[in-house]
Image (cartoon, rainbow, N blue to C red):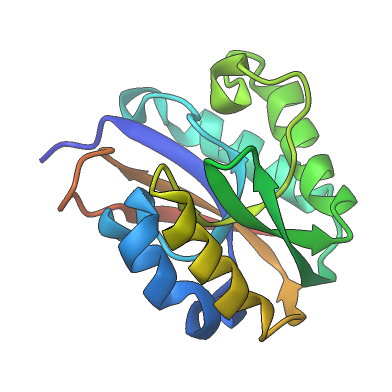
Amino acid sequence: MEPTHSALIVAVAEAEAVVGAHRDLLDEAASWGVPAHITVCFPFLPPAEIDEHVLAGLRQAAAGVPAFFCALTEVRWFDERVVWLAPDPPGPFQSLTAAVTARFPAARPYDGLYDEVVPHLTIGHDHPPAALKGAADAVGEHLPIHARVTSMRLAVGSPVPGASWLTLEEFALG
C-alpha cells in the first residue's frame, strides 16, 4: 500500500515497556506500527511532496533545537476520550513543532483543529472510559519514565489497520 500520510514524531523507546501493551489495545496508531511517541506534526506533508528540499528544511528545524532529557511524569486526559502521558519539560517539543511549522506553514498540526498543541504520549483513545482508566492506573504505577531525546523522525504510511508506517529519515537535534 502506498503511503498517504506523513508524520513527524519523537519516538520514546523508554516508554514502550510500560505503555506498549496498552497502546496495542487502545491506540489505533499502534496497529499501524507507530511506536510510543510524542507528535511533533501530524499530518505533515503528503508523501509525494517530500523531496530533498523538504528533508533539508527538516534537518535545519531539528538542528535548531538542542537534544534534551525529559520525563513522562503524569497521566492526563483530554475529556474522557484520550488518556496520555505528559512530558516534563514540554517546551522542547513545542519548540520542535514551532520550528517545523515556521518552515512549512501548510503543515498545521492536527489540521489546525486546536489553538494550542499539547505535547503528549497517547496511551489510548476512543474506547470505553473504564478500559482507558484501567490503562491509566496501570501505567501510572511506573512513572516517571525518563528519556533522552536526540532526534525527530519522519514517518510515512496510511492510517488504516494493518498498514505499516516506515521511517524515511531521523533528524538529529542540535
